[in-house]
Length: 303
Image 1 (cartoon, rainbow, N blue to C red):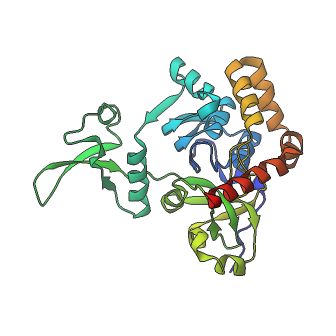
Image 2: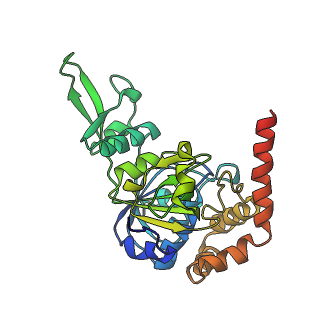
Image 3: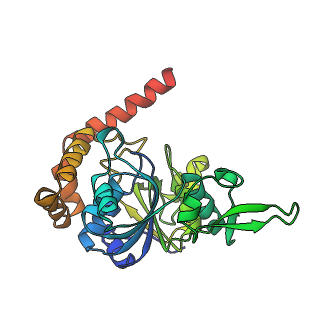
């Protein structure tokens, strides 16, 4: 079978201005940050970004002016503070926002993955008590239950054109494995038209086949595979490394300041390669972040 392995720079060719792009990961874990940095380098604009629980990935694309619309449940830097660029966009009204509950986003993606138009969603009560239903009539609707005659809340299928996720390892055919948090990355892969998997390492198919329980995304769903070491940095990627607290602190300070300081930060990312980014930002901290992840797993087993 034909190899799906491409270079990181391919992302800038696949993702077009105005595309709907769903990003994987959740909280401070496993976001496809190398891909996000490549979108910054490519100068993409007016993206419709979808993120269940976004972090620095979403905020960085906002800082770079790449996002025209955001569908989300939450975007946070967690212990490192709010997402400054999301807040600025929301307060100024310059960013089109579509806020949904996390479970309704999952239901919408699940519907798309099953190739149906909508999914029942009773999570907001019956009748619904949340204003999100009124604010998003293009997402939430009602159908009549044919068995009871009751009105039931449903969520429209959510079909992003592109999904980008970061995996532990993958083979050249796109079979992707995870050994830690992977959020709803598998649902994104089923729902999207085009699926891009970045991974810490590309391995032989025999390695994947010998360890099948770690395979969360099947190769037939994947269009492009990209090897990107430290591809989730500065967020964590278990089992390879923890999140990079010093870099996240620096990022929070720069983006909270905004203005010229943030512009310089984005400009540097936009003009350096991913290898140059790793050398400059991660450098000697890489082994430390890896050891912290290893020790955390040892402590977990010991407990």
